Length: 412
Image (cartoon, rainbow, N blue to C red; front, side, top):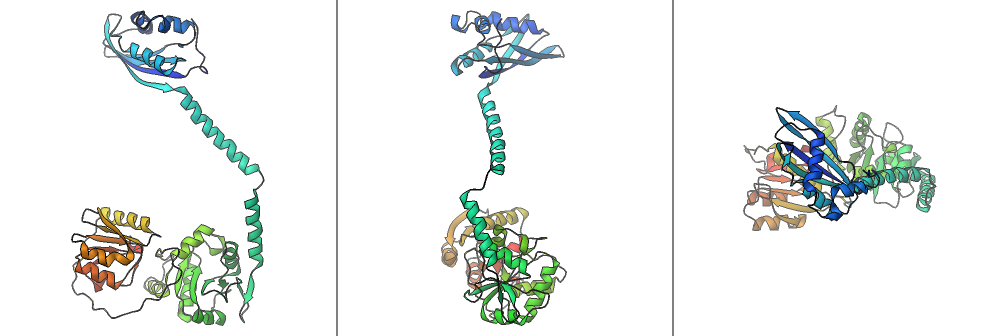
């Protein structure tokens, strides 16, 4: 008999077999050839197909337990799809093997080429990776490297204290204050030309004067030393915003993506000062996420608001908390809001500017999740509509000032 080469096989027929009795492998193979003989015509006669190498060696694997035999039959085929399917279907007509009743069921016809294609793709990925690692950089990479070098050369000395700074300090409305020269260089390399370094542990007079003229963001390392710098800055200068590098990282070593993420996550100087005063030993602050294009911020005005006495808070479940967190993360950067019912189904999606109008027209609102700060006007509209939860990036309203449950990023 001919034997089909594993390379030439296109399909493999996988069949389960159950026999009510004890039989041997030759009995199974004999039944396959004997009971399909003359059934499929001369062109699909199994003996002839095997002689010509179009059907490979039939493998039978069986085991006997409690007087019954179970196993599998594997038949490789180089026939086309239709012919292979016909051969597979023919196996299922076999009802007796030797003296015993039997049941055969084709569970799968495997396309061998799919497996080969998957192996080919994985190998191609490895080869491509090696090629990319060993080839010369393209023109864009060369241009980026030259541009980064030029930016590094643009560092200047600023003010009477001769502080390391980017070249755009005077012309920028906003300034980023960092700890040292290496931090300025890293920001400059990634296109931020409005950074200036304190260059020490004490705050220079130049920095104090700069904070009085421009919108200032303090950008410090993600460690305890960063917290100490924030304390020092907020105690002697008018700091508008504060942000930190990821925990355990320094500003001089973080990537462009991490820089943008940190600047989007800045919080007000007042909030940072309050958090540090409450938890003086805290090693990392919870930073509130903000819209990446929200460059100009106004300091929140403190207006008198009558606290709500003896407010009974609604307990939030783990499921609700996780759902609110997921929705809030999806809304980052959209400046949008989602209004939910008590089953957390979305009743409507609106821009932040239309939350108050939308709440007036919706009677069964349970929660509002939005990409913005929780303002008093939104709280008032939520109270009028009996909303239970407001979930935002940060809050300018204290929890005891409203009967609505307020949640922010840091609390989720």
